Amino acid sequence: MKILSIISHKGGAGKTSTAVMLAEELARRGMRVLLVDADRQRSAGLLLGLESPTGSVQPTQQENLRYFCSCDFPVEQLAAKVAEVQESFDLAVTDTPSLDDPVARGWVKVSTAALALVPVEPITLKTLDGVTAQLDSVRELNPGIQMLGCLPTMYDASSPTQRSLMHDLVAHRLQSLFSTSIPYDPGMAHRAEQRAERRTEAAETTLKAYRAVADSISRSMKLADRRPAPAPAPATARTSMPLGALAAAASPAGGAAAGSGRASAPAGAAGSRSMRSSSPAAPAQSGMPRWLVPALAALLILIVAVACFMAFGANLIRPGGR
Image 1 (cartoon, rainbow, N blue to C red):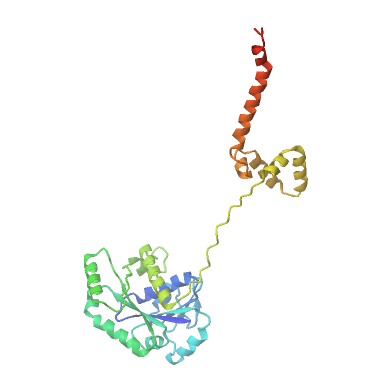
Image 2 (tube, helix red, strand yellow; image 1 turned 180 degrees about the vertical axis):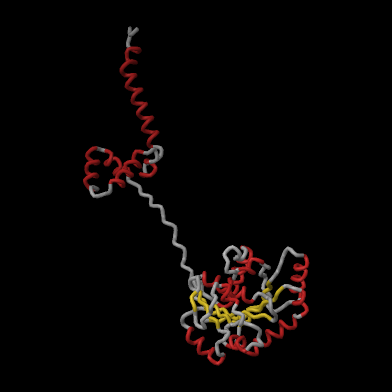
């Protein structure tokens, strides 16, 4: 099992929403995913519709996705818990609180990779040193951790101010800044609402952005897509009958022989073969040359013309035939 920790140098960056959305997206790809709620507010469980975390691994409404609230779990027992569920999951996605929390530091120490969230807002540009300092702290806690990069969040592309902030953020050349940004989505605010009439879901643009981020994470962490391969389209069977066999089947004797040889065939299949034989397209399907039918028709006309001439035209050329 690989472990991905979602981190941020400040609150309100969308860690919980990102952890839940990525866990759901990767689970849809057939991976066995454990969503770890290390935040003491337990917001990840609320977004999944779980009101009462039990302190153990819990099922969710989505196949392949399980939930574990570790905010009250003893930090000294964390490594043993990871070893316990190691074989049951492909990936654990951890919603971590601030690194000041010992639970957050404990999960970072056992993590395979970390994803840093950077909200696109004025205060972020004034605290970019804090982003760098946090990344350095993560490396100190876990020298072997894979830093996936910085993901811009809460971005409103329709706002000129936000576009200017994004331009400045890119200009600062943060470590491995994602080209994809997570849009500001008011629909996420009421996802945990218990009343159905007030509950909302993420917009399609938000889902598309998280799918792109999941693609990048899968490549970087070498996560296998376990979705079943689509079934191949059924091939259309086309059968052809040699010209000699077609002529034999058309004759009374041949028809009787063919009928006796296929006595056990279903009536529907025999009927469909009969309909194909009598249809105008039958010559092409049976392998007969396309020129044969018009040639036979022309030959028949010639025979009739010769017969008429022999019957009536002889009197015209006989002497005294007038």
